[in-house]
Amino acid sequence: MKNSDVKADIESLRKKAKTLRVEILKMLTEAGSGHTGGSLSAADIVTALFFHKMRHDPSNPKWPERDRFVLSKGHAAPVLYGTLALAGYFDKKLLGTLRKIGSPLQGHPCSWKLPGIEISTGSLGQGLSVANGMALGLKLDHLPSRVYCLLGDGEIQEGQVWEAAMTASHYKLDNLCAIIDNNGLQIDGHCCDVMYIEPIVKKWEAFGWHVLDINGHDMGAVVRALDEAESVKNMPTMIVARTIKGKGVSFFEGKAEYHGIAPTSEELENALKELV
Amino acid sequence: MGERAEKTQSKDTVKKMATRDAYGEALVELGRAREDIVVLDADLSGSTKTKKFGKEFPNRFFNLGVSEQDLIGTASGLSLTGKLPFASTFAVFETGRAWEQIRQTVCYSNLNVKLVATHSGITVGEDGASHQAVEDVALMRVLPNMTVIVPADGNETKQVIYAVAKHNGPVYVRLGRSKVPQVMPEDYSFKIGKAHTFHLGKDATIIAMGIMVASALEASETLKGNGLDVGVINMSTVKPLDADSVLRAAEKSSLIVTAEEHSIIGGLGSAVSEFLSEHHPARIVRIGIKDDFGCSGPSPELLRLYGLTSENIVKIIKESLNK
Image 1 (cartoon, one colour):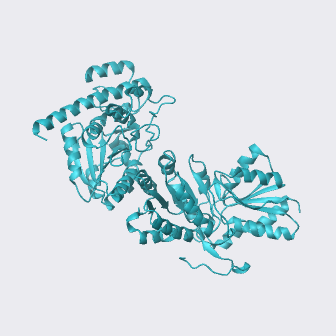
Image 2 (cartoon, rainbow over the protein chains, first blue to last red):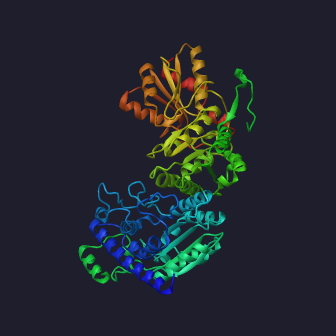
Image 3 (cartoon, one colour):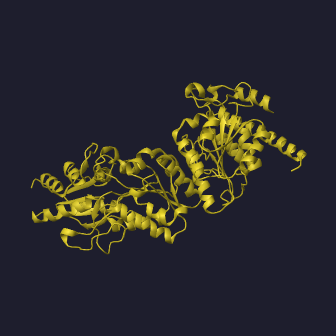
């Protein structure tokens, strides 16, 4: 791609992320509950994955050669639902049914209720193991497909994450790229107060991963990191994406209390003024 | 055969084989027949007998180290790429340590993952309570989409492994450490959800699983000598329970006895009681571990200590029938 094309691509991804944030806020307000902060912090990363990096086909969600995405931080379901709707996996109108009786948009992702969800998640710490298994299976079949797994930073307090960290490097899963949405907050407060998780980069390096430390809201940096991960051989890549919880809406940004609550109608109105 | 089975069939030297050895052999045979079979273990492959598969098919064998939660997750991921994973470790770790992974990832998404655990029950022996799963059937039975199977002997185990490989969905297979006698008839054919009724007794019928089938058969023989007609059913599929077989036994027998090397809470005794209390209230006596942990000791002595012997079954049935 020429430099000017790259710039245009980044610009269109930025716009897409903005549209995604609007959809996230609308569906959460309509639902009346859900996880706002961690959906907004991951919006740029998930946009870059689905609209730049991943090879996937919304009209054929089970295409064997697709790249896979595992949302290990399953509570950020709105960011995935919004992305899948914008990509054309299902009708955008469904977003209004989030968390309601009979809806395929469960509070946390359910793989057999909605196309595009690779595996049901919601209980933290389990996604990376599943992503590893997928990466092993794809290698056995000599498929070029890659596996992406998005974790929360609070989530890495789960022991299973580190079991999986060892497995990925032991089996040299270079077709795996994990991303930590490092927004620094979890339900009970700042991650460093609840349970100290730093130094994140050194920890993953020590576990045998190729680690990239980036600004998770700089679309150019996100895209470059995902591209670099693809060129790494014999080891898995971890992108530590430094993000802001509630990113995009000034009055949600950096607030732990917006981890698990939805915007009110008034907040939505004010938020849309900032985004649109 | 791996560990040599004795050839003689006389009563004193009945053919014996550990169900885990049968599993190890079945896996290798399956691996030769099917490219999609993958096997995972958590640092116990010598004991669970998955090592044989690993030796013949190193590319399709994954040792996850001492990490049972990761074992289940990795098996799940492999199943999502169209592989047929068998994940093995000791029963207490597989169903206990990784219960939530089995619930959230395997069962909720109804993944085609086979959980085959060895070293169930108190016959683990000397290692003691920490390694003796007496709650695993309860833990697995409560999960939606899960099928739970407890084979009685080596031959049945092989058939079970072939059957679950053809079945789509999560399955838990409970195997043991010790050598057990072959009890199922030569022409026996295992089918998921179908119990084997040796015969129904007028006085009582013992519904047993796993190693207790052999003890139940022995007890039935002894009681015959006392003039009592006591039947035996091998309920190898605990879930889905073969309700028809249970019902037929309850209709014919004055007393239903359940026998399991497992807690009487949540296991086979519970499953039978739950069904009969709703559909055909009957007199039931549950033989098993009574809300307790196991302990260290040679397994035959442990079976005596916890009342899991044919002698104790005889005693309990006589007492219950006032004979």
